[in-house]
Image (cartoon, rainbow, N blue to C red; front, side, top):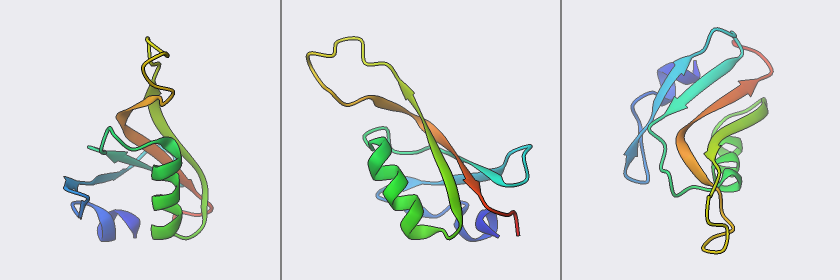
Length: 85
C-alpha cells in the first residue's frame, strides 16, 4: 500500500522512490534529501505512515567533526512496519 501511495511523490523538492525490500515488512526509500537529519526523517515518516516500528537512515561518518556535529545521510533509508498489509 505504501509503495502505491508514496512512490514518486515529491517531498521538499525531491521525488521519493519507495520499493519493497526482501523482507515483507520493510520499505526502501531512495533519493532522499541529504540535508535531512535522522531525527527529521524519522519525524516525517511517523507523520506520514502508521505502524512504523523502526527507521534506519543510512549515514556516513563526518570526517571533520569540528565543522559539524551532524552526520550526513547517504540519501536512502529502510523503514520497518508492523505488517506489510
